[in-house]
Amino acid sequence: MSSGSISLDGRDIAAVPLNALRNQLGVVPQESWLFRGTIAENLRISLPSATDSQLWHALETAQAADFVNELPQGLETMLSQGGAGLSGGQRQRLCIARAILRPASVYLFDDSFSALDTVTEAKLRAALEPELRGATVIIVAQRINTVVSADQILLIDEGRLVAQGTHAELLESSETYREIVASQLETDDAA
Image 1 (cartoon, rainbow, N blue to C red):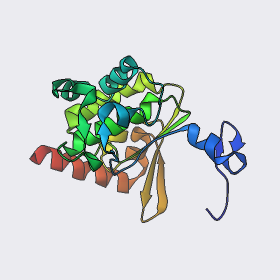
Image 2: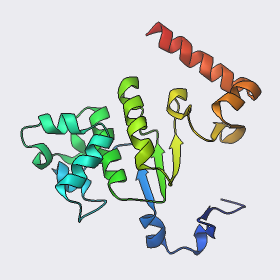
Image 3: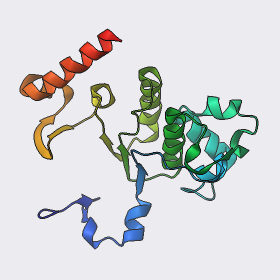
């Protein structure tokens, strides 16, 4: 960053020790990172003291409980490095469960819903809302339906902020946003 500052709870993050800053963040990167070990071990990376009940709650919120429950060993199912054998959506949901297991001030979902079908994504977003209440939630997304209910949408084109507002405000004020919405509606209608 060449100018300006980023504040968290009114404090410039440059003045916050790195470990303290990391403890306030829940991050789900675009690429799902799963490690060799059980599902429970993968989830407990974010909260080592988590009980099985807490794991199941996070899995339910992330819409992953059903498929984990169907696995012969449930939470004790061994995963290979990268989660080979799981679908992209299953991997994403496990990573979301891991991130929300530990309470955080800020959650960053970096295109974390892209491998989910629209029905599962809608259920997941509805389940996340009460769980993340009071936290700052940043969602990086390419699909409009992922951000349509956001308090603020920042439209970035080629690294530049070109529009900002709610969905309704952007429909009124941004031709680029309207074009994206129209193109995604056409794609949805064709499917």
